[in-house]
Length: 282
Image 1 (cartoon, rainbow, N blue to C red):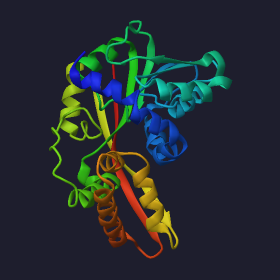
Image 2 (cartoon, helix red, strand yellow):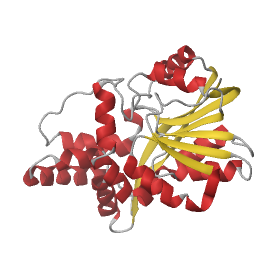
Image 3 (cartoon, helix red, strand yellow):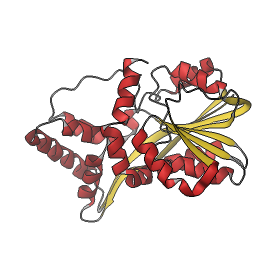
Image 4 (cartoon, rainbow, N blue to C red):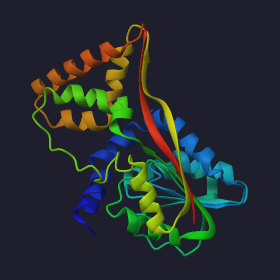
């Protein structure tokens, strides 16, 4: 296991996993449109066997269960025990149609040729060796199998991330510049790179469809306050400010609030997200 991979596992079984469980309902609402678009592209059918990669708290897993019912089956895999605990609670009524595995999908010993569909909502951008990971997962697909996932496009096309982070960065101490293709939310932003990864891993007929939807939104007199609360709940800015002294964090919050006020249109404030819906065949 690489250092980067071990750090991801530690983080998602620690603070990040706990915060995502705490705000699970709100996060599912924010990501629902993106998951629905990927699900439509995946087109799961009755009776299919599906693997939900990076399933988190199980929202997409349960959507897939409903799509393949009554005779299909879905396995959700994730590295976060806290999130899987929540997923199992939510899936109790689904019975044997669903199961969850605590594992790194890029290395877990799946049975060869066992899945009709590999699916993921923002769960495949964190692989430390993406070619190796997708080659491994390709082996778990039936020869007629399919792949469908959603991943963020570039930061410049994701105001929910770019705008508050830019405002806070003007106040905070200099942060390390991230590696452009390091495991993380924007690791799959480059379409050509992702196409090359999937081709090298053995996939064919890869397709990319841009999809945009609101991520953070507020309305009425407290529109800015509503979006501020969302930004500070979970995500990159929340993590950054948690590590700073209170006075510095307050200055950063003031800078973010000013930036949000500039984006407000009447009584409404919306920060959008831009993603790729990626599909391929085994």
